[in-house]
Length: 350
Image (cartoon, rainbow, N blue to C red; front, side):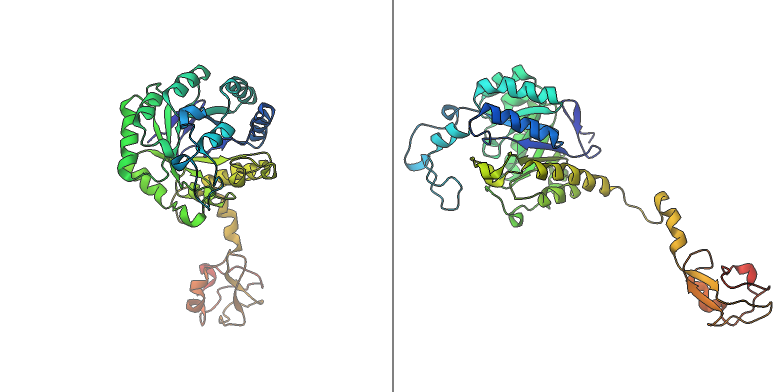
């Protein structure tokens, strides 16, 4: 695999991990705050900012009872109606143009998750680098097809998805003309637990589906994402806010700017550290070979004297015979007058 296109970059194992800062609803219904989030993401080194493009009416029905109210004591949104939640979290469509423009001016990519075909059609005017399909929409093959028909890369979050569902979505995207497909390992709980992250799935997904693979990480902190890079994640998506204390629908599991900077830096270090399988000294290590132990003459000796444990020592540095020859040399004689501190070489042994 040679990677897949993403605006001015490519996603792949030969490139540093792509870090996407997910704004979601953390704008708290303020365009000024949304633009400040874009600026903070760029300053922290993120490669892209991501929005979500929908209206409450494209997401659900305006019903405030039964199935349309969240009934989960462990949910951040327990008791909220779906319609009200989406009304609060939506990024108004008229905000997209200034947000995309601000990202472009700051040199980072801007993309969005569309939630129906009308959103794809709308987003096309902004020339996004890719479309991101949320985990809950991975079975909506009509939506995936609409995004893929644009010829752009399609990024699929896979929370809760079976292998068969992932393969259906991947095939749909490729057959509809997507420039490439990226799968994101995701756990669809908010926040997610590291114990439920199962990032060991990442290399398996890469092999099973023949795609670039990344992570959509809803855990606190950056540890899970950095570990995912070591397992082959080429994309990291994390929710991002200015200050968790400001609140908002996703604030509890979002990174703040200093944390996002750490994620960008540490994920790059993890990627650089993977390297290749190899043994023996690296070119950068060769100067350090001198600090190994080796056999040295430990006191002044006259030609013909016998080597013993008093006049021969294994010490640093490493310019003499290797320590494994020490016992072999004991009992033999020195070939010439030799001063203390001389590295032992075979031409001094008779």
